[in-house]
Length: 425
Image (cartoon, rainbow, N blue to C red; front, side):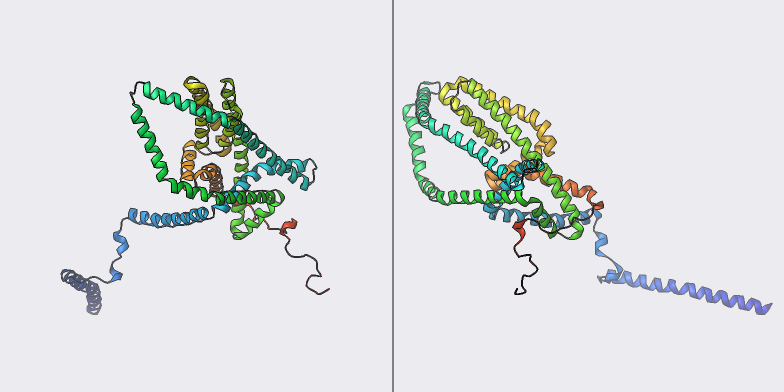
């Protein structure tokens, strides 16, 4: 009994010693830590983490910030390269727009058992005839009425000058002559700019014709082997991304085709409305005005404003302020019908871009590339929007990656395909 009680007492004593040792060690460490902190000694890195003191919102903002900066830098480089290579990029974009219009026409002829070469030829010649005919008709009418327009402009200026001198503003002839002299002197000061612009006209015309030829050749290749070109583009990307790239590209191409068709319809309605209004009001040059309205309608917002102002100016020169006001009302009515009826019902369905997005895209394109930027802003925004939505939708994940396949068009065969090539036979 006494021996059993002794063994129990010894076990209890050992247990107390083991439990007291960590407490003593912890107390020593805690006292040493307090002393070290009071002495200004920094704790080792394993005892504290600096990132734990940063709020989660700040870490999230920092993670988004460097990623956005990286994406912005890549986009800035892309835009810079496009601007530097604009003499090549603009004709290629024109060719893509023409291809989106002419490829369905060529395929329609091929479905009706026309030979492919004849379908491509008819599509190209039709486009050249329509565009060339419109430009020839407009230039012919403008050339015929240029002398009359110049003479009528002088008469309108004399009438306006007389109204300024005799009107309610009480402007004296000395003040008017001083303003004219000031305008003339400012033109003389800027003569160097005008001379340099005239000297660069030759290079500009050369660039225009070179770009036109490049656009025609690119359009021809798109008509002949557009699908082969696209398959080659898809093969540039990794195999896992080809399904997404192929599906997004086809969705963007369909949207671009819808945009071109609807834009032609809207431009035709604008041209007929404003041209018919000018004809009924007796405004001269109604046909050139209608042609300019048709061509200007392809540039959203900017083209409508410029061509509408030109129609009102011609009405003011020839027919006076009353007819000019009526012509302004016709222009505004047609533009309101386009903006509130045609654009939401037709263009909105085809392009799926909010009107605010259209305005921002046109303003950005005009700021970056002038008139070409305004021309391509809406189709580029529409195509990019559809492609991003397609990729983010994830429907392409169940599709197999498209196979490149052999290039069947002769344009891609740059090496002879005979088995005897290279054997010396």
